[in-house]
Amino acid sequence: METTERPVLVIGIDDSSHSFYALEWTLDHFFSPPKAKPFKLVIVYARPPPSSVIGCAGPGIPDIIAHVDSDLKKAAARMVDKAKQMCKSKSVEDVTVSVMEGDARIIICDVVNTHHASILVVGSHGYGALKRAVLGSVSDYCAHHAHCTVMIVKKPKY
Image 1 (cartoon, helix red, strand yellow):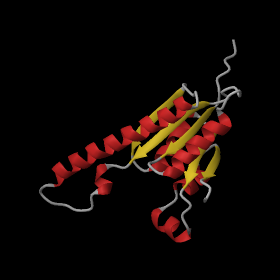
Image 2 (cartoon, rainbow, N blue to C red; image 1 turned 180 degrees about the horizontal axis):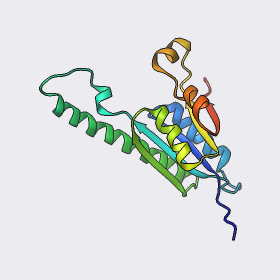
Image 3 (cartoon, rainbow, N blue to C red; image 1 turned 90 degrees about the horizontal axis):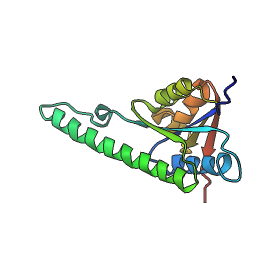
């Protein structure tokens, strides 16, 4: 008996308006009625580890790290809730949302591999060459390392 599992579409989000624009664009173009739902949707949010936010050392650091970790977990919960609400508002109920700690570039590519994704969608912050060189570009990394089609959605400049 053959199974007809839907292909997987992974979308990476962060706390930027650019990534939520990419999520909304994806929902509108791939999941809006009357179209059938051609993909299983997996949303991934990569939260930074608390140690990456703190750049100092000293006796009070463990307490500070605990507070930072708590704040990062709350921010991740807000991102997940916002993403789920966006999906629900577009009548997309079958969605998996994952929060993982670490470098977004690596995590997104790992999720693509784990789910055998057909398409990866990421937003573009629109950084220039200098900022991209200094900060690194998640979309650029994913375009070169993800083992699937990568769609980079740019937020229009109004």
